[in-house]
Structure formats: C-alpha cells, structure tokens
Amino acid sequence: MRVRTAQGEALQGLLHNQDEYTIHLLDVREQVRSFQRSGLADVVFPKQSLMPSFAKSLSAGQIDDVLAHLCGGKQ
Image 1: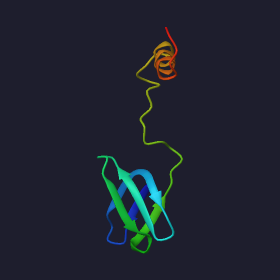
Image 2: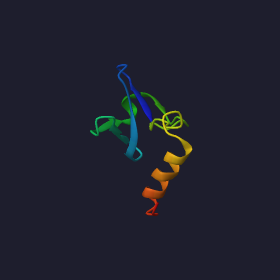
Image 3: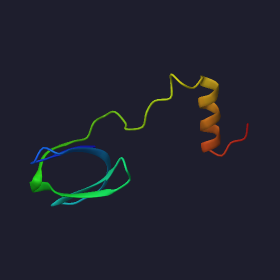
Image 4: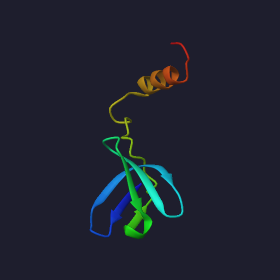
C-alpha cells in the first residue's frame, strides 16, 4: 500500500492494521508507522506486489525448487 500525508510525505509498505480513524503501515524498513486517516491526502492499494519478481533471474526449475522447499516437499 502507499500513503501520502497532507504534508506531501509518501510512504509504501504493507498494511499492518486499520480502523475507522487510523492506518498502520509496516514500511520497507520494517517499522510500523501510524497515521490518522484525517491527516492523509491519499491511500492507494496497488494491484502489484512489493515483492520483486524472480521470473527473469531464476529458471523454471529453480522456482519449482523454491516452491517445493517452501511447501515442505523433498527434491
């Protein structure tokens, strides 16, 4: 998610928590930032993930190996 404060500060990260009055963002340095909704000029939930794509740096077999490892499978 991306937020822009009324003062123009722009941040991006993961939505940590939200309620009617506040938004809590886990920023790229893994710090939780809290914002009053009334102090935000913009809140955007982009469709693209913050995680980089490894499609161009890993072969299909390497991606399969990573997925097997994450799922607990054996190679």
